[in-house]
Amino acid sequence: MDFKEVMENARKCLGKCKGCPVCNGVACRNTIPGPGAKGVGDTAIRNYAKWQDIRVVMDTLCEKRPVDTSIELFGRTFKYPIFAGPVGAVAMHYSDKYNDVTYNAELVPGCAEAGIAAFTGDGMDPQVMQGATAAIKACGGMGVPTVKPWNAQMIAEKMDLVKQSGAFAVAMDVDAAGLPFLKNFVPPAGSKSVEEMQAIIKDAGLPFIIKGIMSVKGALKAREAGASAIVVSNHGGRVLDQSPATAEVLEEIAVAVGGTMKIFVDGGIRSGVDVFKALALGADAVLIARPFVNAVYGGGKEGARLLADKLGAELADTMEMCGAASLKEISSEMVRK
Image: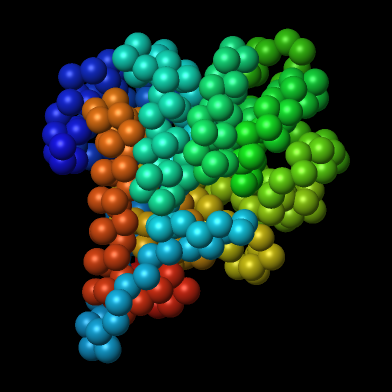
């Protein structure tokens, strides 16, 4: 199977997702349930468009050297600075070919075989986190369980599963506070104070990644709470219209953090060239979500592996053409905004 076949297969079974040749948020702009957003969905469209406004600067007048795309994070080495983003309720938002448990059973090992890791999603059904952490445990802890900002008791219950999985890190997508089902949850769930996050992070006892940071102020609060890393993210543009794109805020956040914590970014990143741009603006690594859903629906774990390798090859080619032999050599001078 090649990646073209994966996408052809995916279009036959994605359901509410159209499997567009370019996943830019336009065709699904206001579809929830579905892969789109509440409201008109202009933030998802902006996420994609702003990465395209950034151009890479070619420089081939340099010594030809082997290109190394590997990265070390939290004591583990990954083949690419590319991770599958967390996705939940796949049966509702895509089609019933998979549910969250069977989806993660394909995604997690597929990513592990490609030398990267998957962030897994969460849900109201306890089986979602049980299945995700079981898949991660079966892959030697090669995955990042992502816990939603529930109330304290539910978070503690899910953290017990995380610890049993041997995961090398754990995440919380605080930006999920804008999702309708979480806003209406009883007991209350959603936004967390710095003090609440400090307690959650202390209890986790693992490198902790806070996803959903869109400002310098938010990044500094995450650092104060004790996070090891942040994900610059607006939840794929799904939770708030008229938000800036992640590409628009990444650089200023990276400058403010000043290397004191790791920085991931997601939102509209669709190619290895986009990954290069993100690293040039200060990210250490990226998360890519919707394309991995398509890849799994079209080819199971092989689809996930093929997508990771496709993105990695595009990144390596861009690095070579721009004069960077390692990720550390990628700099802001290699892009034009």
